[in-house]
Length: 185
Figure 1 (cartoon, one colour):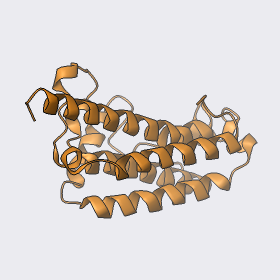
Figure 2 (figure 1 turned 90 degrees about the horizontal axis):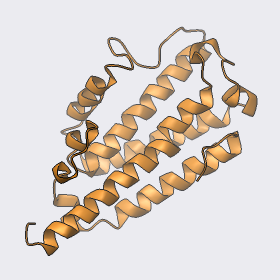
Figure 3 (figure 1 turned 30 degrees about the vertical axis):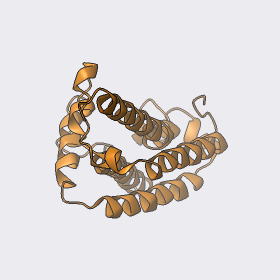
Protein backbone atom coordinates (compact mmCIF):
# COMPACT_ATOMS: atom_id res chain seq x y z
CA UNK A 1 0.00 0.00 0.00
CA UNK A 2 1.53 3.37 -0.97
CA UNK A 3 2.13 6.03 1.67
CA UNK A 4 -1.09 7.99 2.27
CA UNK A 5 -1.23 11.51 0.88
CA UNK A 6 -4.78 12.38 1.92
CA UNK A 7 -6.94 12.06 4.99
CA UNK A 8 -9.11 9.40 3.35
CA UNK A 9 -6.09 7.36 2.27
CA UNK A 10 -4.66 7.62 5.78
CA UNK A 11 -7.94 6.54 7.38
CA UNK A 12 -8.15 3.59 4.98
CA UNK A 13 -4.52 2.55 5.53
CA UNK A 14 -4.80 2.83 9.31
CA UNK A 15 -8.01 0.78 9.37
CA UNK A 16 -6.71 -1.85 6.93
CA UNK A 17 -3.39 -2.37 8.71
CA UNK A 18 -5.01 -2.42 12.14
CA UNK A 19 -7.47 -5.04 10.93
CA UNK A 20 -4.69 -7.13 9.34
CA UNK A 21 -2.71 -6.95 12.57
CA UNK A 22 -5.59 -8.20 14.70
CA UNK A 23 -6.66 -10.83 12.21
CA UNK A 24 -3.12 -12.18 12.44
CA UNK A 25 -2.91 -12.04 16.24
CA UNK A 26 -6.27 -13.80 16.62
CA UNK A 27 -4.94 -16.70 14.53
CA UNK A 28 -1.70 -17.08 16.48
CA UNK A 29 -1.42 -20.54 18.00
CA UNK A 30 -0.86 -21.15 21.69
CA UNK A 31 2.67 -22.21 20.82
CA UNK A 32 3.32 -18.94 18.95
CA UNK A 33 1.84 -16.93 21.82
CA UNK A 34 3.82 -18.81 24.46
CA UNK A 35 7.17 -19.01 22.67
CA UNK A 36 9.35 -16.02 23.57
CA UNK A 37 10.53 -14.00 20.60
CA UNK A 38 14.05 -14.91 19.53
CA UNK A 39 15.30 -13.07 16.48
CA UNK A 40 19.00 -13.61 17.27
CA UNK A 41 19.52 -15.79 14.19
CA UNK A 42 18.57 -12.85 11.97
CA UNK A 43 21.51 -10.66 13.05
CA UNK A 44 19.31 -7.57 12.93
CA UNK A 45 20.82 -4.34 14.21
CA UNK A 46 17.63 -2.48 15.23
CA UNK A 47 17.10 -2.55 19.00
CA UNK A 48 13.47 -3.67 18.81
CA UNK A 49 14.51 -7.13 17.57
CA UNK A 50 16.08 -7.78 20.96
CA UNK A 51 13.64 -5.74 23.05
CA UNK A 52 10.21 -7.25 22.47
CA UNK A 53 9.72 -10.76 23.84
CA UNK A 54 6.07 -11.46 23.02
CA UNK A 55 2.84 -10.14 21.53
CA UNK A 56 2.07 -8.09 24.65
CA UNK A 57 5.32 -6.16 24.25
CA UNK A 58 4.53 -5.30 20.62
CA UNK A 59 0.98 -4.18 21.43
CA UNK A 60 2.20 -2.14 24.41
CA UNK A 61 4.71 -0.40 22.15
CA UNK A 62 1.95 0.56 19.71
CA UNK A 63 -0.27 1.73 22.57
CA UNK A 64 2.44 3.96 24.06
CA UNK A 65 3.15 5.59 20.70
CA UNK A 66 -0.56 6.31 20.35
CA UNK A 67 -0.37 8.04 23.72
CA UNK A 68 2.58 10.15 22.57
CA UNK A 69 0.60 11.35 19.55
CA UNK A 70 -2.62 12.00 21.48
CA UNK A 71 -0.89 13.97 24.23
CA UNK A 72 1.24 15.94 21.76
CA UNK A 73 -1.57 16.89 19.38
CA UNK A 74 -4.02 17.76 22.16
CA UNK A 75 -1.46 19.88 24.02
CA UNK A 76 -0.39 21.81 20.94
CA UNK A 77 -3.86 22.34 19.48
CA UNK A 78 -4.81 23.81 22.85
CA UNK A 79 -2.08 26.43 22.73
CA UNK A 80 0.78 24.49 24.26
CA UNK A 81 4.29 24.23 22.94
CA UNK A 82 5.10 20.61 23.66
CA UNK A 83 7.63 18.49 21.76
CA UNK A 84 6.49 15.11 20.41
CA UNK A 85 8.94 13.16 22.56
CA UNK A 86 8.73 13.81 26.30
CA UNK A 87 11.73 15.04 28.28
CA UNK A 88 14.46 13.89 28.54
CA UNK A 89 14.16 12.07 25.19
CA UNK A 90 14.97 13.22 21.68
CA UNK A 91 15.21 11.51 18.29
CA UNK A 92 18.71 10.26 19.14
CA UNK A 93 17.65 8.74 22.48
CA UNK A 94 14.09 7.58 21.84
CA UNK A 95 15.30 3.97 21.98
CA UNK A 96 15.72 4.49 25.72
CA UNK A 97 12.12 5.68 25.88
CA UNK A 98 11.02 2.51 24.09
CA UNK A 99 12.84 0.47 26.75
CA UNK A 100 10.96 2.45 29.40
CA UNK A 101 7.67 1.60 27.64
CA UNK A 102 8.72 -2.07 27.53
CA UNK A 103 9.51 -2.12 31.24
CA UNK A 104 6.32 -0.25 32.13
CA UNK A 105 4.14 -3.01 30.68
CA UNK A 106 5.88 -6.15 31.90
CA UNK A 107 3.01 -6.76 34.33
CA UNK A 108 0.26 -5.75 31.92
CA UNK A 109 -1.96 -8.64 30.88
CA UNK A 110 -2.22 -9.41 27.13
CA UNK A 111 -6.00 -9.03 27.23
CA UNK A 112 -5.72 -5.66 28.99
CA UNK A 113 -3.16 -4.25 26.56
CA UNK A 114 -5.22 -5.52 23.65
CA UNK A 115 -8.24 -3.57 24.89
CA UNK A 116 -6.10 -0.53 25.69
CA UNK A 117 -4.66 -0.57 22.17
CA UNK A 118 -8.06 -0.93 20.52
CA UNK A 119 -9.33 2.05 22.51
CA UNK A 120 -6.27 4.18 21.79
CA UNK A 121 -6.51 3.32 18.09
CA UNK A 122 -10.11 4.57 18.11
CA UNK A 123 -9.02 7.72 19.95
CA UNK A 124 -6.29 8.37 17.36
CA UNK A 125 -8.74 7.82 14.49
CA UNK A 126 -11.28 10.16 16.08
CA UNK A 127 -8.58 12.81 16.46
CA UNK A 128 -7.39 12.27 12.89
CA UNK A 129 -10.92 12.74 11.59
CA UNK A 130 -11.02 16.20 13.18
CA UNK A 131 -8.36 17.54 10.77
CA UNK A 132 -8.65 18.57 7.12
CA UNK A 133 -6.41 17.38 4.30
CA UNK A 134 -4.71 20.77 4.36
CA UNK A 135 -4.04 20.60 8.10
CA UNK A 136 -2.69 17.06 7.79
CA UNK A 137 -0.62 17.21 4.63
CA UNK A 138 0.69 20.76 4.29
CA UNK A 139 4.30 20.90 5.51
CA UNK A 140 4.71 23.24 8.45
CA UNK A 141 0.98 24.01 8.54
CA UNK A 142 1.43 23.92 12.30
CA UNK A 143 4.56 25.46 13.75
CA UNK A 144 4.80 22.59 16.25
CA UNK A 145 5.23 19.95 13.52
CA UNK A 146 8.52 21.50 12.47
CA UNK A 147 9.44 20.97 8.82
CA UNK A 148 7.11 18.03 8.30
CA UNK A 149 3.35 17.68 8.26
CA UNK A 150 0.95 16.42 10.89
CA UNK A 151 -0.18 13.56 8.67
CA UNK A 152 3.31 12.05 8.78
CA UNK A 153 3.02 11.66 12.55
CA UNK A 154 -0.38 9.97 12.20
CA UNK A 155 1.03 7.64 9.52
CA UNK A 156 3.98 6.78 11.73
CA UNK A 157 1.87 5.77 14.74
CA UNK A 158 -0.89 4.03 12.77
CA UNK A 159 -0.51 2.41 9.36
CA UNK A 160 3.31 2.26 9.30
CA UNK A 161 3.58 1.11 12.89
CA UNK A 162 0.92 -1.55 12.41
CA UNK A 163 2.80 -2.79 9.36
CA UNK A 164 6.03 -2.92 11.42
CA UNK A 165 4.26 -4.96 14.13
CA UNK A 166 2.74 -7.36 11.62
CA UNK A 167 6.10 -7.99 9.95
CA UNK A 168 7.63 -8.70 13.34
CA UNK A 169 4.86 -11.13 14.29
CA UNK A 170 5.08 -12.90 10.92
CA UNK A 171 8.82 -13.29 11.42
CA UNK A 172 8.21 -14.76 14.88
CA UNK A 173 5.67 -17.21 13.43
CA UNK A 174 8.09 -18.27 10.70
CA UNK A 175 11.00 -18.74 13.11
CA UNK A 176 8.83 -20.65 15.59
CA UNK A 177 7.76 -23.04 12.83
CA UNK A 178 11.34 -23.46 11.61
CA UNK A 179 12.57 -24.25 15.12
CA UNK A 180 9.77 -26.76 15.60
CA UNK A 181 10.55 -28.45 12.29
CA UNK A 182 14.23 -28.60 13.22
CA UNK A 183 13.43 -30.04 16.65
CA UNK A 184 14.63 -26.94 18.54
CA UNK A 185 11.32 -25.71 19.91
